[in-house]
Length: 388
Image 1 (spheres, rainbow, N blue to C red):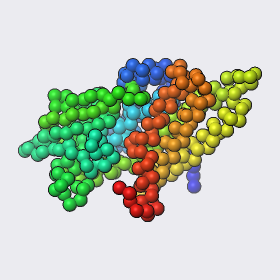
Image 2: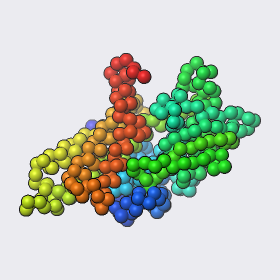
Image 3: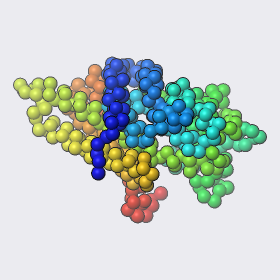
Image 4: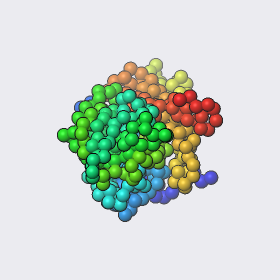
């Protein structure tokens, strides 16, 4: 086994790290507290050409794989930007995969080059209040009328909707009661987020406030047939193509937050003196930080295996889910221990570890909870009876 990153992969890490040095703790703290989208950061990443990392070259991107995408997003989170930074660009980096694979040539040429340059913001509209993680129970409905569909429904926890021009929208085109298989009858669109027919309401939340999470109320949204991704009724199958890569990207972001939190904790533990010696000398603080290092390193190995499998066309469901689980656990534990190492100052906004703690906690919930990961591993890998 070769654990060495390629020269190009190392270049991505170093270049992104260098690019993001200008965005310090004060920048991210200000954006988070004022609930402002990080436009300057987004523009810098776009100018560097990073948004098109996985988009095929014929549509203005670099055509690289999920391994490179995870390296990029890990470095973005590790820069100190955390989830505010990663969420600002996450969907642009790999979220358009269903369009790349299943979209018409016209739709791809109309949208993908704009995503690659950063000119086009897109949000992802799947989750609904009554459906939760059971996507088969969504009720947002698209009714065909000639060369258009008319969409009505409701979506929730839609990141970046306030900034987005378009939405990758999953709907039903056949009622759930009228299909033989509950995953049938769903259709995916990439269409304009027309504010005249979509009421967007930000959700007040615990953290990651530079990037909004929103509730969408859709009333009579007209969607051209040309905005449909692939065939009618196959939308659920299309979004499945992106689930394993999404888990890997989230794992990388959790890993990045864990790494930067641990770095800050070590720095503070070396500099802070109590009772005449640095607090890092005390094993009660040193051992938890060393344990977090070991857990982050182990989680990273699973992530690397998962991305290698995906990029080489191998089955990777077990590894992708395990990587998300382990990275989320290790990232949050590292952030929690970093806060504890800082003591009372860790609870103060003056130190970034409070922000890392809030954002790392999100990774154990989104885009899928740790419990649902264990459900998958229990039933799909261990062969135990399915519980849902």
